[in-house]
Amino acid sequence: MTITSANDLACEVVDRTDLLEVLADRSPIDATDLADELGSSVSTVNRVVGSFSRERLVERTDDGIVLTPCGEVVLDAIDQLVGTIEITRTLHPVMTSLANAPIEYDREWFLEATVTTSTPKHPSASLNRYSELFANAEHKRLIGDQFVVPEYGIDAAMQAMEDGVKCSCVWSEYAFEQMVEEYPAMIDWSADQNNLEAVISETVPFDLAILDDHLLVYGFDENGIMSVLADTDNAAAVEWGTAVFERCFNSGELVDI
View 1 (cartoon, rainbow, N blue to C red):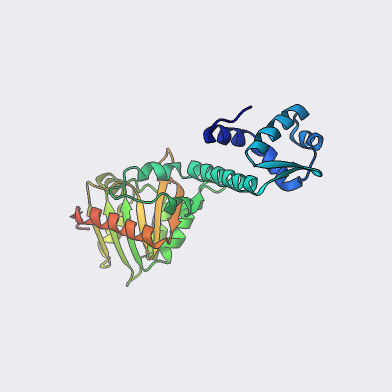
View 2 (view 1 turned 60 degrees about the vertical axis):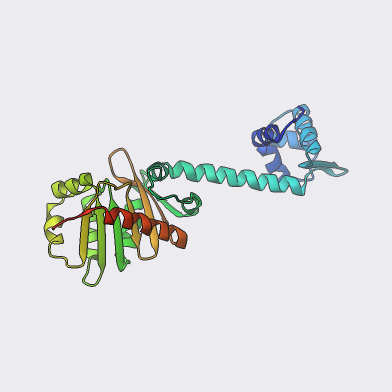
């Protein structure tokens, strides 16, 4: 194969990453052993090696085929790409929500965030992480759109609301109606909390929390249960989240609870 462009090279490299990975672990190696490792024919290996040699990714030496420094850089880039694909798969519910962000944000904040996912084996993992951060925060700012969590999550939130801990909330009409319907005891309890303020806003874009110096954005499964949580203490991300919260809060109507 004659590679005529960088795009062609990228496609060939992605298609034959396995060859570069073997060279990274076992070079120098001769073509026959390389073919055995890959479960491929020697002729195919020689074709790919010839192509990559012309691009300075691999090199034939007296001792065998080796990966060049340029090849190492390209292989590292592929590993990063695979990692990015994996994290974006996991973050799909979060990234979908962020499409409605009213203020521009940097995707890298969330690609580099701590990501907690719920699985069949650990169905409450995301909520547990949320509850942990919530309980330890002195200043809680919340934006709720769906706000459908198991009852024990509500109980944990109520227990965490002690005197001196400030909590400010922005709810969509849907979220507030859900809470009134599903958790009337919490609404009654909230009326006695002087450190709690809440508004209902028509501009709620997604679910978000700022817990002290931590930004949390979360996504939900088809049942409305939190399935993935991305949290970060990146200062720029927290500043962005605060700006989103303030915009929503200032556009809302105070709830008399």
